[in-house]
Image (cartoon, one colour):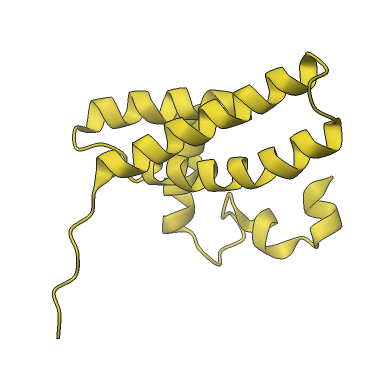
Length: 119
């Protein structure tokens, strides 16, 4: 049985920063007329999905080794999705204590259909 690899917090932040810059670059290219809206969305939506995974690591305090720096990095990464990091952090950590309960702040994600969730 092999040992489980140790987490590499800095790598998650590097990935998140790269995705953040790629998303911003794509938006700037679209805004200046360099690429179509369809191309911008086709590239940026997957970037933002994986960026949210990096932000999730920040919520759990494993984005960077130092908690304060990790929170600051999570805050910066969350700017592009226009959701305040402290709000994301509080709601998600509250969710872990209330999974399956009526007052789970993330229940809408699990209970709603795809169209309702999008709207």
